[in-house]
Image (tube, rainbow, N blue to C red; front, side, top):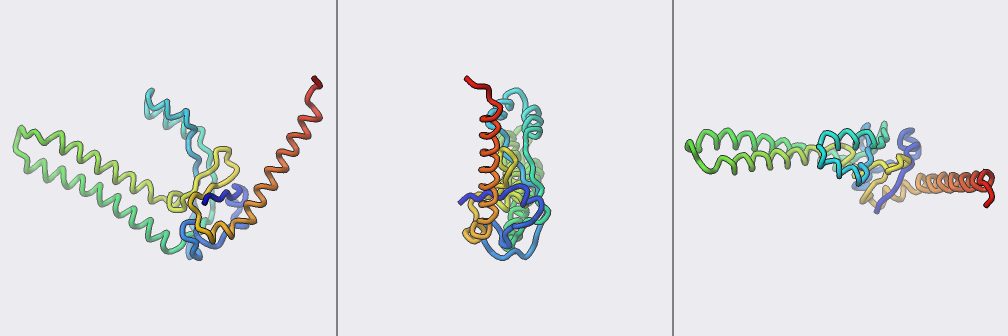
Amino acid sequence: MTVAIPAQLVVSGQGMPGVCARHGEPADRHRRVVFRSKPPSWTYLLIVLGVILFAIVATVLQKRVKAPAWPFCSRCAALRTRRLLVGVGLMVLAVVAVVVLAGTLPPGSTYGPLVVLAFVVLLLVGLFFIAQSGWAAIASAVTSRDGAAVEVRHAAARFVQEAEPAQQWLLEQRAAQEHAAREWAARYQPPR
């Protein structure tokens, strides 16, 4: 289940659940986390023009919400450590394998390109695991596209239950904004 917590509450730390989002267990640690929104879909077309251009545009358009104290449990910390160790282990394995194979392959061997491919694949998989070990990834949360909320995907039932007042507050805020927009449109829109 996905739950949205208003960015204002996340930044202030008020009304935050006392359990971790992933497991629903009581939080035994709080970490500063920066949640980021996903880039708009159209930005992926920029990869054709260059990865650097895509990265710049995606970063500029990204919304961020900084949580000063997001709740995590000991299982979350263990998951983070596991992901870090796997990622670093794969990267070390890639380097060691290249060094060993470079020393043992006979000159002019046809396995050179396969060794390079295996090296690149192991490095990329290792980097993926390291990227997934960040606290935002462990919380399984992103900022909404408009930056108004932090959306927690696959939230534990207990986290959802404790976040219910925050969700209600968000719904009330959105309803008030829609009401104000309708009043403004009725008042200032020219007659037809």
